[in-house]
Figure 1: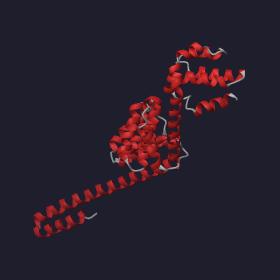
Figure 2 (figure 1 turned 45 degrees about the horizontal axis):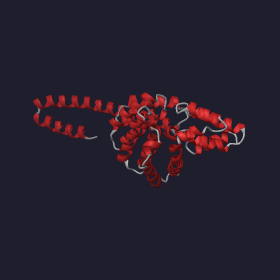
Figure 3 (figure 1 turned 180 degrees about the vertical axis):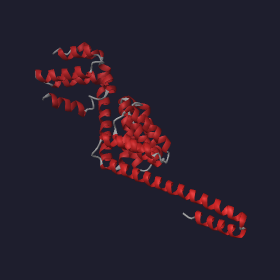
Figure 4 (figure 1 turned 90 degrees about the horizontal axis):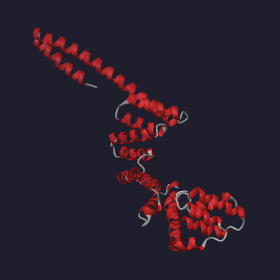
Length: 302
């Protein structure tokens, strides 16, 4: 068994990335697995894995135990209660990891109803707080939020992303996800606030700028929207969607300017018209009144 195979076994058990499990039981897991490895090469590999993953958790005691061919009975005896409980803990953890894998599979297959059930089951898992780090819990809530959003439940999706932010407040993607929910709920200023925060943590993500450009377009802040979409294009020049959005914003801005110019010109003509016929009314009241009424009708037309 080579290092890669051993590492795959560890990853399969969710060991390498679970600080919560490491804190409780990983030392005994290593002792147990070490007994199964027969040759020196395999033993060296598992010792190295222990060194990499247990620097903060009784490293000295564990490494001494792993290096001692007789396995000091005293060390194992002192921690017997933890070792006895480990098999149950391990199975419970593995069951939970299986549900997580199924949830991800359903999500990627766009089976969002089923994914929702699995993610909700994980969050309601009795030991959810103990078996997952804050960062891992934030990811679960984020997947759950995206699942709810695809199902059209924007309010609950917003709440899920808020939980992700509480757990990992410096991860920009969660603010970005919540901003999408605010857009879905037509709360554009809230979305803008979240995107500003997201960009403060992750300044080079083109998707953040693309969404902010879209929101600023909706708020008719066309110059700012163009600045954002230019940044997105600079970061990802091959994304056709960004270029299409830039063209859309540019066209809207141009049409608005043309419309404003026409309105201004129409206003000037109307002013001259009514001043002229207003003066005419003083000289020829009937004629002046007729032309003023005619002007009101003409300039009220689009």
